[in-house]
Length: 132
Image 1 (tube, rainbow, N blue to C red):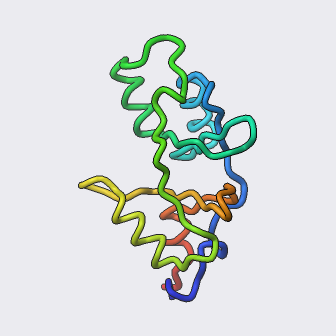
Image 2: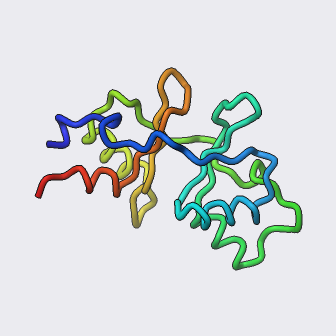
């Protein structure tokens, strides 16, 4: 099943993004408002430059690790793990597992087509696609 379905078959096409100059507090508010766990960071030309997650932002805000005015570009992860819309779901699951932390997986992967952000695929999208 997972080998037959492609990322483009299950991914979300509407991606909420954030500019690198966004204050981390406002970026976290955007995550909560849209009930999502990560925000791709795109520059003025819509070029992907990084990603921030709710876990990282929320944890550091609670611990008061950010100074007033801390920008997303100061805390974002620049090496983004991604898949192609043509990749099958097995590839996506493998990347989620391979690049996850020691105790977990990456919950969402950005979908890039010729270096252009075209979507996002989550573990929930993949689970929803399974016929049980």
